Amino acid sequence: MGLANKFSIAYGIAEALKKHGADLVFTAQTEYFKTKISDIAREFGGNDVILCDVSQDGEIEAAFNDISKKLKSIDFIVHSIAFSDKNELVGKYYNTSRENFLNAMNISCYSFTEVCRNAKNLMPDGGSLVTLTYYGAEKVVPNYNVMALAKAALETSVKYLASDLGEFGIRVNAISAGPIKTLASSGVGEFSKILEYERNRSPLGRNVTQQDIGDTCAFLLSKLSAGITGEVVHVDCGCSTIGVKF
Image (cartoon, rainbow, N blue to C red; front, side):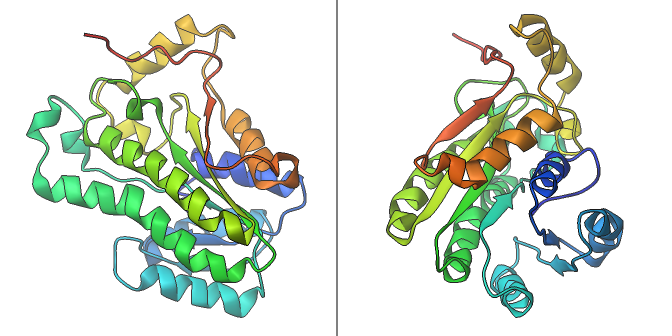
């Protein structure tokens, strides 16, 4: 959930999962995005793209009803969805509007809760869910603003969802990826400076890649990580130092 193009983190994850033999289904927010990613979906196995605008009441439930008609059960879900008005990802956080705050929380955080609730019935033998977060949930990152609040709430949701779903054999984790060029990150003010800062201070001397995140996600979705749940796993080439201290 959340594939936009070949530069998406979700694309790197899909590559890794397909390499390990996964059968994949994708969702799209609108018909426009469905058309855009249909070729990518065919590249990864040819399954239909399911419409699902997570900001709208009833759409997540409807999407899972559609999926249940195609698949009797599922083993995993990747939630790679977040949103804020890019005009509010510059300047001061205190200028965040109420409308954008609520919208960012709804799409970036609450949608994962609703996804987990609907996924439970399609995971009779257990399963694994992974969402994407960012270090801005822990430390101040310039211009990340309301998205930091949404990601912090998302990380707390992961812990509560892991506790709630553990009795069903369902694991819930998050990947906190270092800065990476995507359609979403392009909306963050002066993001190129963050990339440069991280690269210059990383022990590995580089930024994180789609493959890094994809391989980590494949691990968290597989039985190799059967004892891991409720965790935020950092994939950042060893450098989470972008935070601003006061």
